[in-house]
Structures are given as structure tokens and as C-alpha cells.
Image (cartoon, rainbow, N blue to C red):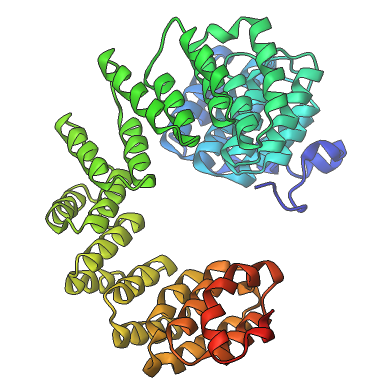
Amino acid sequence: MPPSSSRVILRGLSISQIQRCIPKWWKQSPKELGVESNHPIVELGTTNNESMLDILLNSLKDFTKQGHLSKAFKVFSQIQLHGFSTGDDVIEHSISSLVLSCSNLKSFMQGKQLHAQIISLGFDQHPILVPRLVTFYSSFNILSDAHTALEQSSVMQPLPWNILISSYVENELFEEALSAYKKMVSKGIRPDNFTYPSVLKACSATWNLSFGKEVHKSIDASGSRWNLFVHNSLVSMYGKLGELDVAQRLFDSMMERDSVSWNAMINGYASKGMWKETFELFEKMRVEAVEVNILTWNTLIGLCMKIGNFKGALELLSQMRRCGLHLDAVAMSNGLGACSHIGAIKLGTEIHGSAIRGCCDGIDNVRNALITMYCRCKDLRHANTLFQSIEVKSMINWNSMLSGYCHMDCFEEASILFRKMMLSGITPNYVTIASILPLCAREAKLRHGKEIHCYIVRREEFKDYLLLWNALVDMYTRSKGNASEICLLLDGLTEQMKDSHFDAVKPFCSEDGLLEDID
């Protein structure tokens, strides 16, 4: 994310202020630096200037490669003392190496000192150093500083802008990415094949189809459309934004396609719920002998889960394994979900074994899917063993186990777990509450349900969750003889929510003569 105001770009400071950031020891002698007597740089006085710089540059290269940044900086101080006699290139090359090393080693203060030196020496417009600085600030997610350093430069190459735009997209700052692209174009800098994919992704994420079309025109004018990377990004953008006719035309016009191209179209149809077209495209992909990667398989398995075709999901999972692909965490989670719905505990146990062998059993999504699978397959012992093995339990972990107990109608176990959850410092969310309310519908347990009802009323953030109010209405209507509670409950609802529940509660309230109270 962008930095706090305490981290400001150095460009706005005066030269004297900038120079305060530069370490004094950069201008000290080897003796003052405390370099060992047998180190090459102490013998520079007996060496000609060219050999001297070769030794220094090699030392700098070795130290940066080994991650010894402080030693590299000491060598840099000597390069500054001796480098100007042979021109600025030596200094520029040295600074470039050090800035890159600061990015890789996450050394912010040293990088900031180098930026100060770059400005002090007048190298802040250098076509190699500017991209290095943008990369440096981007590596710390200090993107406002990266943007300022770039915007104040006169570098006309697309590389630093590509780095900045890509960093914005990686940090999900999509509007900022589009703003940077517009600024880049306004400066007269021509985007290239590395610019467009990030910009098109930002258009997709912001649902900005109109600007995406403008970028498309720019791509056509530049001839970049025939670049596979760019062409795939266009297909993906139009597919995600629902323009499937355009996406299909672009896809059909491709002279070369890879698995990314096919996945972009498959995802486009899948996102619109066009199952027939999705599976037809998948079959065509296989007929044309295109390698079906794990992303494609996961997309199709996920589709089967969405439409409730759990047997189909497991069949695809089986085909995927026969193709020699190892299941990843997404495939395992989907497979376990399918097993949960149809009670396929044997296959679920096999997937559990694959998760252990693939070291995926510690991944939260897989672990929760395993707990749910064992619970729904009526194996609470295994589910509880998995749950208890989790050292730091997340909200989803608690909800998975609690839902399992509720599914098996285990009121006492669910109540105990709910209390433990509260005592552990985890605040129940609407999923937690909606899971446990159905167990309170019995007359003997209604007292617990009323306590939870009070808890819901006290939690302001719960008032608009229709799922919770549905669960409450269901609880009161299933517990006979509680029409008055239903009336009180409906009094607290909005008119729209009240209308959605009226038919469900009407029979109970009419029996007690309370129907007029909720009209």
C-alpha cells in the first residue's frame, strides 16, 4: 500500500538537506573505514587507475552477490573517490548494482541514502537508475514515492512505467494503475507489449469496459495485438467483462494459441454461467491436443460444484489424476466438497492421503474441507481430531467444526464448542450464528436460541444480514406456540425483510389472533 506521510520522496528537498542523508564515511579513506590491511582496496595507491577501478568493481560485485551490503558500501566510497577521473559511468554502474541489491535484501535506509546520492550527483534522470529506483520503492510497496520519482524524471522509455503499473496491479491498486498509464501516454511515452497486459487487467478489475476499448484501439494501432501475451490479455478482459462475442472473435482470430488463451475463454463462459459452451470448449481443447493444465481442470471442477453436479466434479478429478497431474490445494478442496455432498467418505479419505503426501493438509482451505467432509460423512471423531490438531484456530476452523456438529444434530457438543470459541477470543460471525440457530428450534432448547437472538440484536453489524433473520424466523416457527416472539422479531425488521417472511409466519400468528400485529 502507499506509504505514510513520514516517508517522503527526496526530490522535494534542497541539495543541502539531501546531502545530510549521505553517509560521511562514503568519502573516507580505507584506513578511516577500518578495512583490513590485506584487502585489495588498501593497496590502490600502488596500482594504476584502470586496475584500481577493476579491483573495486569486482569487489563490489562480489559483496553484493554475497549479500554483504555494508562491505559493498565501503567499497563504493572508494569508487566515488577514484571514479570521476574515468567518467561518470563507473559511479552510475556502481549505484545501479547497489540499488538493485538494496531491493533484493530489503534494505530501505541504504537505498534511501543511494537515492540521495543519485540526486546530489545529478543522476536522477539516468535511464538505467530511474527504473532501478522505481523497482526499489515498489519492492517496499512505497508506490507513491516510486510514482513521484518517475513522474519527475524525463526518461522516455516505457520500462519504469511498466514496473510501476505492474506494481499497482499486484497490490490491487487498479485505479492508480490506470492513472499511471494515462500519465505515461500524456508524456508521449509509447506503451509496449509489457504495458498492455497490466493495464487490461486493471480495466477488468475496475469493470472499466469503455477505457478497455480505448486501450484496445491503441493496441491495434501499435500492432501489439499479434503478441500472444497481449492478445491473451484482450481475450481475458472481454471475457471477464461479459463481452463474450468480442472475446470469441479475438480468440478465433489468433494465429497462435496456448493454454492461457483457452483458459481465458473457458473462464469467460464460466463466469456467465454458460455451462454448455464451457464444456464444449474444453472438449475442443482436448481434441486439438492442447495441454490442459491444472488451472483449466480446477475451473471445470469448480463449475460442476456451482451447478451441483458433484459426481461430475469427482469424475473430472479422476480424469485429472489419470492425466498425471498432482492435485493442488484448490482441486483437493473442491474434491472434498463434492465428497461431502454425496457422502463419498472412501474417496474423501484418499484425497486426505494425497493432501498429507503433498504437504497440503496444513493449508487452511484444505483443512476446513477435510473437517466438513468427515462431519458430513458422520465421522465426527476424525473431524474433531483434525480440529484439535490446529494450534491457532481461525474463524473458519471454528465454523467448520461447529457446522459439522449442527449437521449431525449434536446440540451439546455444538454448545460447548460455541462457548469455547467465545472464551478463546474469537467473535462469532453471522455464519457461526446461522449454523447454531436451527438446533435451538426444539422447545427444550429455545432458551438458548433466545439468548442468541439477544446477542444478534446487540450486534449492530448483524441487522442487515438476511441469512440470520431467516434462521431466527425458522427457529421460532419450528418451535410451536411462540407467535408472540415472532411478532416481536418482525417488529425489528425492515418492510422488505418483513414481507419476505410474512407467508412463513402467517399460519402461526393467525392461530393466536396476532396476525394484525404484523400487518
